[in-house]
View (tube, rainbow, N blue to C red):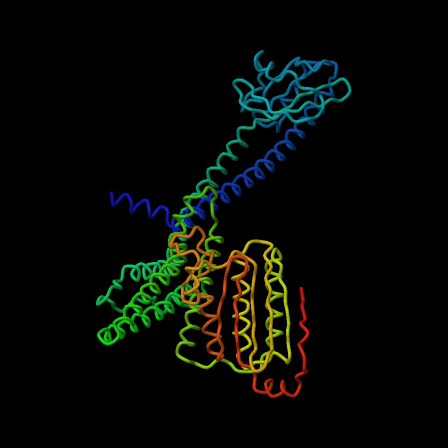
Length: 520
C-alpha cells in the first residue's frame, strides 16, 4: 500500500508533469516536421514524375502522329530509349482504348490484356495527370494528349517513387525516434537538476513542520541551505523568506524559554505569554505552510482540476506565493524592529497630504465604495515622523474598511489639527466589528475569520495589519483606538504636532471655529 501511494505521488509530481509535457511537445513537433518534410518530398518527386510522364506522352504523340490513320499503331514503342515499364495506348474519338501495349525489359512491347485496358478506360484527353492501378503491372501515372484526331495515352510506373517515399518515411521515423529518446533523456536530467532546489526547500519546510514545539522540546529549526536562497530565482526567494520567518520563530521561541525561567515570579504573565506564543506559532506556521504547500504540492493540486496547467503558470504561482511570504516576513521584521525600539526615519510630515494620497489610492483600488476626505485644520497638520510608515498606517485602515464592508459603504477619512495634537479619523457605516473581537483587534494575528482552513488563503489578510498600525503609531509617540457599533466604526489616531508646527500654530491661529474642508 505504501509503495503504491509513493509511486502515485511521484507520477503526480511537478517534475513528472513537466517531463510529460516536454515529451509530448517534442513528439508533436517531430511528427509535424516529419509530415511536412514527407509532403514536400512527395510533392517534389510527383512533380518530377509528372514532367517525365508529360515528356513521354509528347514523344508518344509525335510517333503516333506519323500514322494518324492507324488507330492501333504503337510502333513508336519499339524505338530505342523507351523506358522499361512504359505503357501507351491509342484512343478513339470517344476516348475509348483501341489498343495498348507496355514496354518490356529486353523484349518487344507486349499488348495489354482486356482487364488491363479496362483499368485505363474513362480518361479524357485533357492533359491532366491521373494515377491508375493496372492489374499485373502495378500503379501508373498516366496522361492523355491529343493532336488533331490522334489521341495517345502514355504512362510510367510509380513503384520506384512510392518505394523511395516509403524509405524516406522510415529514415525520418528512425531519426525522430532517436532524437526524441536523446531529447527526453536530456530534458529528464535538466528538469531533475532545476527542481532540486525546490525539493530541498520543500524538505526543509517538512522538517520544520515535524519539529517539536512543545514545552521543553524546542530545538534549533532547520534552515534552507544558502545555495537555495538566491534572490534572483523564485526558489531562492522562497528559501530566503522561509529562513527569515524561521529566524522570527526561533527568536519568539527563545523569548518563550526566557519567560519560562520566571514562571514562579510572574505566573499569570507566563501563562499569557505562552498562550500568545502558541497562537503566534500556530498562525505563523499556517501562513508559512499555505504558500509552501501551494509550491511543493502544486502538481497534486493540478491533478484535481480539469484544465492542464503549463510550466510557465507553475512558476508564476511560485513567484506569487514567494511575494506573499515575503510580505508576511517584512511585517514581522517591522514589528520586531519596533518592539526593539529601533528609531524610524524622522522628518516633517504633512498629514493632510498623506491622508489625501491614501484616499485617492483607495478610490482607485475600489470605486464601489463612497470615499470621502474631510479636513478641519486650525493650523497645518504637521508632525515629525516617517512619512512612508504613516502612509502605511492610513492605507491599512482604508484597506480594512474596503475589505470588511460591502460595496456602497461610505468611508470618510478626516484630519483635525487642534492645539498640540494632530488627529486622523477613519470611519465607515459598515456592519461594524464584532464586540468579542474589539478587545484584541490590535493584537497580532487577530482576524475576523479565525478559521485555519479558509477557502481562499489570500483573503482576509494575515492579521498583522492593525498590529503594525498600532506599533507604528506608538513609535511616533501617538495612540490608536477604535469604537465600533453596527452602522459606525471609527479608528482614531492621535499624534503629537511637530514642534515648529506647534509654535507656529500659536502665531497663526485664528480666533473662532475653524472652517471644515470636505473633498468627495
